[in-house]
Image (cartoon, rainbow, N blue to C red):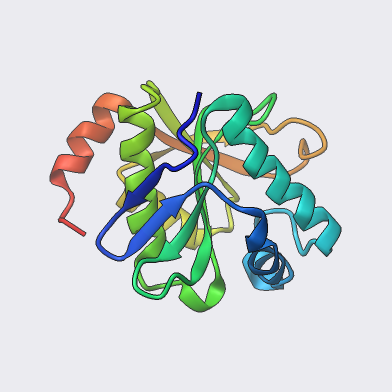
Length: 185
């Protein structure tokens, strides 16, 4: 069973389970063409509602899911980061997507580090992957900052089987080594 009140705090962020009252934030984010370019394209509000319900339900059914990422000081919803493992997925993933107006400020890195710590410590995952489009240079750079390496082309399940993705990742022992070498954020 999961802790409904799980709250991970970093220097600047709060990571917690998504909530229905974030639907407007999720909708604005998923209507932004540039933000959604590598993660399925712009989505209508009804699809966004379904994505949010999957995120909420994942916590209940599996004991983990993507976190909503909030700025600690203001409480502003910045995006979603964290563990996901849909049916047929090529592995246990920690993914990220931050609202475009908050990119390039280190939020994705800070949230992804906290998520990686959590999945290895709490879920005892043996490895983590990141499914990244070959053209998504920003996510590749983040994966490198986390210490992940490109393990080659991956295959996603239907209806995403035609999406080109590279699988980046690392094992728990690699994360421990890489995490100890990272500057404190």
